[in-house]
Length: 190
Image (cartoon, rainbow, N blue to C red):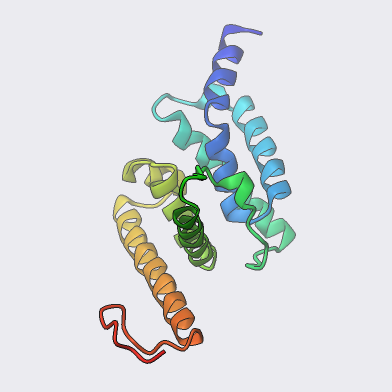
């Protein structure tokens, strides 16, 4: 391997998990995400000479994002009913010492995942890039090719919508369980 090829391989492989994570959240399918990451890495490897430095992770995630949206356009898939595979995507450490706490943590994580999955792709991706991949606002702006102000407003809208999704889910669960009290009013009718 040539020194430049070795450098490209080293830098790109360091971001494999982030690339897969983004592709998986955008496509909602493990196999499609694997194909997209493979295509994105091939593109990135061949275009590595055009990389001008800076945040290699953001550069790669831009390619993954573009490949994901190209795939979604080609296949016409934008359904929201694909199941999310917790074993592949969670890094939750379960504790045998406190099964109740473990169950509660898993239920909360499932609620957040479900609320996130029903967001529109442009809101879901910005939350993934900021909260899970921890990209800066500037890197997100470069990745999704929008102005910095758009990143901030879209992130605010995404957080608001996620909160609404979670709140409405909790509300419907409480109604389904026959509770009419508010969280601050423990005297509700059961």
